[in-house]
Length: 448
Ligand SMILES: Nc1nc2c(ncn2[C@@H]2O[C@H](COP(=O)(O)OP(=O)(O)OP(=O)(O)O)[C@@H](O)[C@H]2O)c(=O)[nH]1
Ligand SMILES: [Mg+2]
Image 1: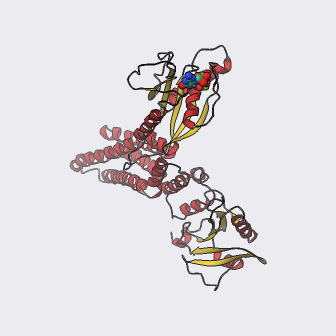
Image 2: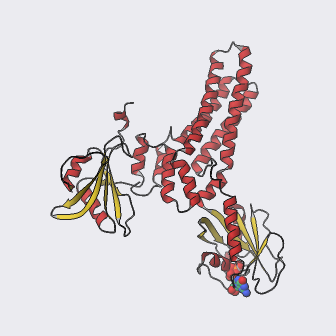
Image 3: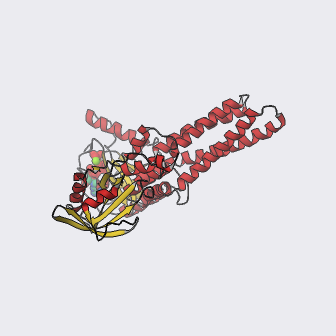
């Protein structure tokens, strides 16, 4: 396909504010589409009419007799732009009014408002951006913590793509070796050697996939935060601890057991680590249907969360609910201001009333987070879409290896390797459906 025919995708000019609209020195409005220079001529006044691509010009933006703003305007000529189309960026003064007024002016000149992710979708469909990089860019603008940035940047800047591309190359190699066997079935001696090579290549690919799948839990924690549940008998101080960690009165605290009934969720940042924290109903059997429902939800959370903080009270330190279903537990005894207790091993003593031990608990939570997120230089996955694609590849590869070791025809093995390859190529966006693309690009913010 020629470059001209690739760069077809939806040429209608679109515009959006690509920066925030809070009070700020500068805001950026981005425009993409076909033939933008004639449009610019209508709204921009500058010293001469020539536009050198990739050069900033100080211009006036005019609407009738109003000078809306003076702004720096830069033009990127297709195909050398983010979207692969003509792109114009207007760097105007920030704030609530000016960027919106300029956007309204653009709309008045027939440039429609972009929907979320539309620039990046055009970039992808014009071959400027691969799918995993597009996902990374969306995550990069959503990132609020270092772990989220780390998960985003490996996607956005190509490291992840390279890793998956190497995997794809292995599968292609196995496939061409298999095809050689299918095409020249008579060379029996060579076949045994070939079989061994194919088995080796498939085994290596499968090991890489296994490692990536195993990294998903850690990658997800990096990207979405660590799911932490506060669990314990009624009245031990779970809601008090939630409030102490958040530093505000989020949950109702009272001396009546059974105060929290439905669970409460919030996000918590400790030294730049993101937690999704849940305060739950105290676990006991109760005649109250609503409370019992809350208890069932709390018990379900034991298996669903990444970490359980199991609270007891210093007044009855042994009184703790069963938590064998939990993946990982941090044991905490609260109300240590009331009774002196000897801490059992691996147990933290705190008092939500005096604040004692809360710092140590926070440090422990930070250590748990760091121990459950991927190492800086490792390849890992953090997106559910990638996880499912790799699961499909794994299933197919396991079948391929089984068939290669058995009596199956090479055609059957090749079929399974093709399936694995298709799953990996879908991950990379080499094949994609509208549904997948819409799912991905609607998660972008406006102007991206
Ligand atoms: N002395 C003392 N009292 C505390 C401490 N932490 C909580 N309390 C008190 O214990 C009572 C119960 O606290 P909550 O935080 O509501 O306990 P809970 O575990 O959420 O209770 P449920 O929601 O009923 O399961 C309240 O009266 C709190 O003020 C503490 O460290 N020391
Ligand atoms: Mg409570």
